[in-house]
Figure (spheres, rainbow, N blue to C red):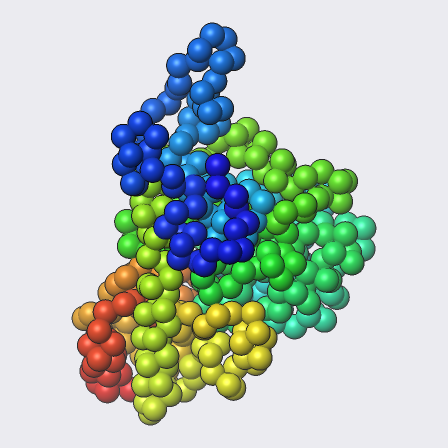
Length: 396
Ligand SMILES: *Cc1c(COP(=O)(O)O)cnc(C)c1O
């Protein structure tokens, strides 16, 4: 077992080795894909390494869970079949009917749908707050009832920034837990647990997997985090992961584990390319606003600079000419693939209003029609800029 907190080792060393000792039988340097459902017992209850049935635990998934815990500096890691499966498990493990949670005004559309259309009918109420503004979050807290503050930072798709340590204080004063969706930053750029968050969630479909070839989720808990009734957050989530059963399969776990090995180098290149794309967009007449936490003019640039290593590979911008022009730009790029999702090696372009955020149209989370979101990949940046330029020159 790898100690999830090894301060002596750097990020990439942990990404490549944590939870991944060479196979004891063969010496294979990569954990095998344990395509197996059940395990031989040496007499009743004589489990080898605790393995009994693969919903409860599977060695490939264990490797990923230990690696994720090490990368986020957490107590325990949990791997799920999707980001939303992990989030659903967090909500049901840590809240019960009658509880209240605070959610961000520009959350991932699927997260909001889960909270509004699954958790709410189940009896959990929510209030929406602007997470970039700590006072707005404090005002949304209902004393004695709010048990969770949910934060995404950077946010999707407007790249808003929430101050994780300030919100951890607001949550803890209220007897609530702070959950941070760290998908956009990845553990390489941001470490929410060290800033006081109690739980981190990821869609590993995005930067963690990194190659657009797997759907998955991860959850990591802070050491010693407890619920308002004093129960261990890790224990609650472990129980619910097994009881609800939305686990990552061994092949999916293996793909995410492979992705994690190169996370640091990929993130550096995503950031380099995003900075160059931002610079290009700022200089283009057809662009009326650029959203990127690395810009000094960004509302919470200072906070981002404090809590992030760099500013990430996601960029969004608004074009002159409204929704019509925005949708045409998305259709005119060649190298930037029109598609949902993000965080892969290939660059993607999308129109949030009609695509990823269509499910929040007509709610407080609706996004501007002239907004375009970019997931900047790791191709040669000159080619990426040239392709954006031809589309923008023609249409704006
Ligand atoms: C994609 C995404 C999710 C949902 O994850 P799935 O793997 O699609 O279930 C949650 N949060 C953020 C920020 C995302 O980008």
